[in-house]
Every structure is written in C-alpha cells, then in structure tokens.
Image: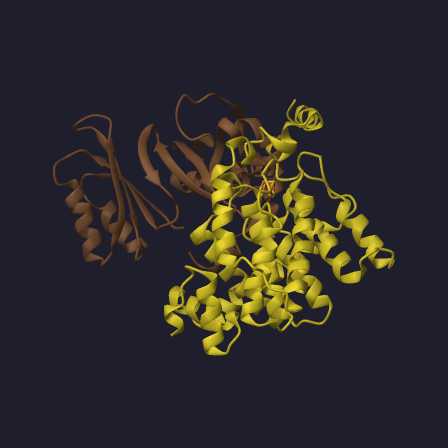
Length: 293
Length: 218
Ligand code: SF4
C-alpha cells in the first residue's frame, strides 16, 4: 500500500519498490500526493519547478565576473567550463560537466543568487550538477524530475535517522547527504535496481563519513563550494560502482546511523562555528579580517 | 516533513539562516506594521552582527521590510530599492544579554505614523521565531496562519476571541498570551492549522475589547 510508505529506513523503501516492481520515485510521488492532499500532477509540477530553478542557475553561475557578497569567491565555474568545452579536461564531459555545474550553482548561492536548497543552501550544487549533466547526456526532463523524488526519499530517511545540517552533524550530514541523494537519483536514471540504490547511498556516505563543517569566516564559501564539486564526483563514483553490481558490505541504514554517531561525537568547533578545521588556519583568519575588518 | 523540505525551498543564497530567515523576519515585521514603511531601524545581534556583510543579512532584512519573499531575485539590490522607494534605513549592531544568537530587532515607522518594534531570531534551516512585539513577549513561527490580537486585559476576552475561532471551525495549534500589567494591554498570539480569512479577522476586530488584530499568512 503506497499510502503506508514511510521513511524510517532505506531498506524499507527498497523492499517496497521491489515488491511493487516500480521505481522508488513512482511510489514516493504517490505517497507524497496523498500526504500533501494534492494530485500527483500537482506534486510533480512543483518538483519540475524546482528542477527548472536549478537549471536556471548554470548560466549566471558561470559568469566570469560573478563574485560573492564577501568578495572571497566566484568565477571558478567559468574556468572549469571553458576547459570542458575545449575538450581538454582529464575526465571527459560527464565528470567535467558535473564539476563546473556544481561550482556554478554553489558560486551563485554565495553571490546571493536564486537557488534550491538540496537539502541545504550550502550543498545546493550537488544534485543539480549530476541531474543537469545527465540531461545533457540524453536523460529526459521528466526522468530527471522523477529521480528527484528518489533523491528526496533518501534525504527524508537521513533526516529521520540522523540529520542534514552542518551545524548539527558536520559537513558529512550536509554535502554527504546531498551526494547520497544525488547517487540515488543517478542509479535510477541509469536503470539500476532498488538494491543498487541502497548500495550507492551507502558508498557515497561512507566516503564522506567524518567530514567536518569548517566554513572560513563562517561564510558558505570556503570550503563549501569545492565540497559541492567533490560531492558531485562522489555521487557519480558511487552510482558507477553500484550500477556495476558492486555492493556495500555495510547497508545504507547502518551507514546513516554511523554518520549520526560520528556527528554526535564531533566537537562543536567542527560544526559550523568557524572555530576549527580550515576556519582556524592562519590564512582563514586573515581572510576573515579582510571581510569583516 | 515532505519532499519539498528536502529539495527546497527556492531561496536567495547564501545561507538559509542568515539570508532566507532574515528576509522572513523583515517580511513579518512589515505585515505587523500594517502600512507602507517610511523608516526602518535595524539592530543586529550575535552572529547576525558578526557576519551580516558576508551573508547579506542586512539586504535580506531590508528586502523583507520592502515586502519581498525570501526567493525574490531583487533581494540583493534591496538597499538601492529602499532608497528609490523612500524607505529610510538605519543599521547598527548591539549586544544582547540573552536570547538566540541570530537576532534582529526592527523598529518600523509607517507613512501614516504607525510604529512597531519586532524582535526576531533565525533558528536554523530558514525557520524563524518572532519573540517580542513592542517589548511584549510573543511566539510567532510564521509557519502557520496566525492572528496577533492586542486587547484590553479583561475577564472573558480570551473566550470571546476563541469562540469566534471555534464558530469559524478553526483549530488552534499554538496559543500564547502576554501582558505587562493586570488590567492593561495584553497580546494574544494564536497560530492555527488553517481557515484564517478576512471575515474571521474582521469579526475578532469588532469585539469590544480588541484594539488591534493582525493576520499573518505563511
Ligand atoms: S562546510 Fe559546513 S557550511 Fe560548508 S557546505 Fe559543509 S556543512 Fe555546509
């Protein structure tokens, strides 16, 4: 019964999709429509709007003159894009495309542009980077939008069992969760099974376990923007491994709980307070003075 | 929670707490003023005071006071728009002894001379709480349709107001009452699940001891 679909565990969602013989996204859309007391078309349309806002971030995000409010960042997406378009980058148009798009959306966020939190503003570049790159490689907009329901379902499970905020769980909870969500979307777009989705989520999270939240000067710029590029590449890596049939020995639900415990034991200096990690380096302190005087 | 709490909201960056939340605080203050603002005095506290330049917190607050939503692309040009629209803005920073670290106190003066002082805090993920209006403690999350009712502190006033809500089939999910002194002026903050409309607000406004009734929609 789709109405009884819940977000207590990823294993539960995977089992539901296997039983139904349908992609997880279809089940999630149906359940959300019931929960929100809207039609499936209305809920789909709302998600489609979000996808279009994401797509609209790329061009302004690639403006070479883009600068953040602090003046610390901007203009890097343009450099990466140029290299990809010249065909010179090492890893080809898929990885290169994901990298420049992740930078574009994150840099636009830092420059007070209009973005979609996914799941947060700090990690807003990861999901659009992978989806828009897949669209460029031939995925339809419809399929991209549907895969966002699968990605959201992963986010809902993480929110229920751990958390999504850097201030609460470190960057593993923010960029880590975004990469896990993006990996799940990629598995669905790549035609993978629900089981593979679990593996991809587990692999993506495992590779960012322990990542601290240490924004320089407390601003969502350094290292956040590059962690979005990293998150997009980890999402592709995790999806590729899972789609090749490589499983995770630790199931996703256990990785999520491990992430929660790691987050709980992380000192507060490493949870968005800008008192530790990169934020406490001499250069970070100098940049902080430069911005705030 | 639903999927749009995970993928969403659409907002102006860079920070849900320091930018989007700040815009919502400004927007609610403007609604509470109930008229076009002519002057805004903004005092920032805690991490708002420390990092507002990098997060555009000042721009977001001004945008909200101008009536913009947190996803309005004009948000970052709000100081210029304020000048064009004749809104006088004075910004300063201060120290708060207690309260949440991300706090702003906004004093707005309207074109018709009305004035209101609102204290709001951004509590993470774009969520906010307004915890004082004109120095009276309140609790407004802005997530539910709300009625803010200023009234004379007399026996039976609360019942009269809640009777109107019950008649209208409205379910209350949060209620707070505060007053400075017995028999003086009191403020009720009523958050509800839905069903708030102008007709209900007008009925509450018509009650003899009600001095002011403002509706806030999320
Ligand atoms: S370092 Fe902190 S603020 Fe930056 S993206 Fe990671 S969790 Fe967000």
